[in-house]
Image 1 (cartoon, rainbow, N blue to C red):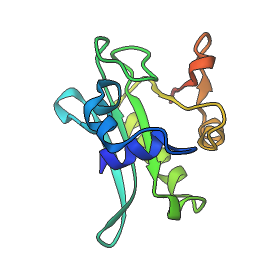
Image 2 (cartoon, rainbow, N blue to C red):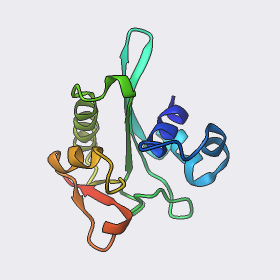
Image 3 (cartoon, rainbow, N blue to C red):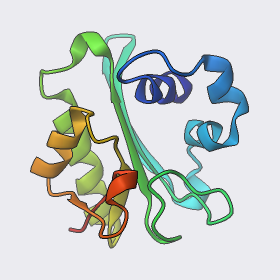
Length: 145
């Protein structure tokens, strides 16, 4: 499911990458692994047997950083909602869930990366994420409880 979500996130505006790219390119494939031993956490939204959305936060290391990497102690958030379920509050619910989980875990901040024209950017702003000074062109945003 994380591979599907990562591919969906990469292709949010049009088909730019393939499933093979997600599996084989390190800058993408690290998003498909949630490692609880590393401290990663996340949530899945389902409707019956079907996953319709997912949010996950990963502590990616400096030698294999994500696009939204800020520091080793800052997990990077990824969020995806199946296209036919968008616009119904699922993304907001998932984002709030990962924020609540971060608070409960004592996580000092979350980061993410979102392209400038991506409609999800509005959600992140409304939910308290702010642009990271000096990283605006990368679309890096951060949230602190």
